[in-house]
Length: 423
Image (tube, rainbow, N blue to C red):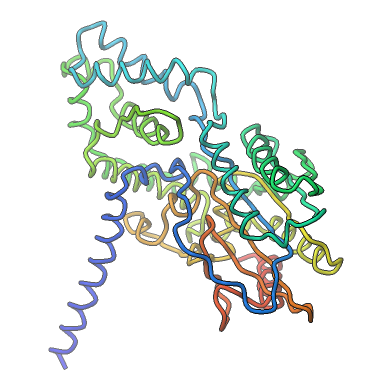
């Protein structure tokens, strides 16, 4: 008995080690994934399952994050650039530091003033997603099908919507497309309760644990001494934590631009992985199903789910064809996926060091992340639905014998249960 128990422990430990190692190896194999929500949209890699015989698609319900963008604030670039400029003037930079400064100055010539703006790649992402949506759902977009598109009032979302809908119109000029951006729709496109905002605030109870986790994981000394050559100068003039984190965000955002400039050479893989873990943990608590929030964050998606239900029923009951397109942010699609528990994205993990094993921002909400719900019906008006996350077929926690296709009536009951509960 003892021998069997020991063998079981060894097997369990091996499984956990392999799971941890495989996730870390996945990240190391594509270091751009450490960008988390700055990960540039990955094109879908999986083949779609054939539609069941006798069924045709008639409606697409969608929520999409804006495409690739610049960093939110000019100071994200200029702040660390100014630190390096001052050090250079005082002969306190290494050759690596001088190289980093030259790269920053080159990027700055095009970055200045582009606070949070959509990049060219961001527009292209939405064109391509739109093209594939049209191609994969021809019956939903045939003739004078009705397409409604709404975005938050943020320019990068509005422009993403424009790229997306223009592509649809180019494929079928007969489409009846309406586009809107208004405060009227913010109550479900970008909903955040006061309680959830307070939970995310800098003085919230969980922030101290986050800071400790970050400090424990991020090793500053090697990185800083690779840039600066004078310890006294560093001590008096440099905030090592700010410099390292600034370069992390800048390095992460380069994949969203049309540039060959990179800053990943400044980091070791372990360094950037440790920074990513801390950042990923913060996004998980802020935007997903962390048990610390007791459901406050994921429940921000309830008004959005209600809207999804209402518009789906309108298309079904009125025998309409077309799509409902919605454009917002990572802080909206992540709670939606957590609330629906798409592919276990509602997983709860309390240990900061374990979060990356169950939830990763680069999987959940990369640039241009989207959830598509494709509706199908037969001549008997039996309705099926399929879920695509970033254009790949995904599971929700409902039984089906025909995955990826679910009975709409079952899904409807499930969605209604989510909107009526305050978990």
